[in-house]
Image 1 (cartoon, rainbow, N blue to C red):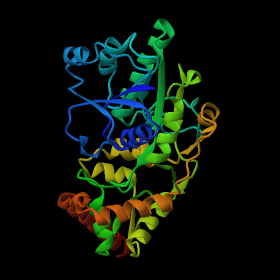
Image 2: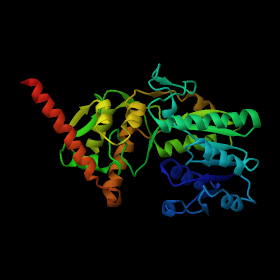
Image 3: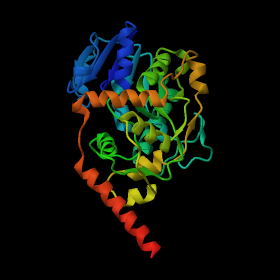
Image 4: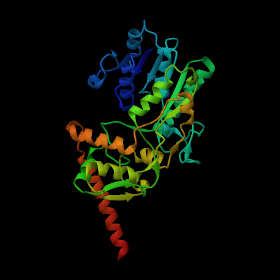
Length: 338
């Protein structure tokens, strides 16, 4: 199978690339070459900026693919470019959408591919919905062979899966735990969430590649395991060998007090209970099973980051913001007791 990935160096695409190379796939990666050091040996690198359509068209002029996947398309205009580039050059075009595109707030916490798409809280999600609409129109009217994949919260060994963290990554939360400082958890921590390890996601994704039954379909790929945010944070603390010192804060308050996009990332996503029904994926890929439990995956991630200082990126601004939020809450609690 000859495959082209646009991007190919992110959390999701890196795991897929590794497994494809192990399976003997002829894999091409089109990107700017800034993060290729971690890519598996054996991939063909096409160094170009996808935004330079003329340059890319020249690079792929003599190439045809079984599958093309764009991991870095976020707006319809980018897919319009992809259509011009790959119409007639691929048997399947896979678009990476997002499970955050599903109805928010949900009318039913159980999510299937039939759940409506609507997210008034997050522009990112609305853009993904617009991308899906554009591609489905191409499929219906022009036969462009599209498949839409909706990941949810997918993680790897390089980033601890969290609800509330700063712009520089997730290490500062772990550092606060190690220093026995209080850690912010949005809401009361009891809403259900789904974490999917990237190697599990890759298994489902590869099963959709070249799958004639996936053409014209939308499919989410997640674990079947549901855990609360309290359990997630407790698991992280356990992996670090410390006791969790949690402070629960309303998501609306966190959004109102921060310049981070917590309206989208929390109110439009992580603050809501979600339970994914993966029946459609399992019909299309009967062998699919997510086998990495949350406690196993998080421990693996924590151990990896502790062994690799380059991923221990401190975020003093976020750290100070956490301290300020907690101080304000404690002052308010004291004032109410007087």
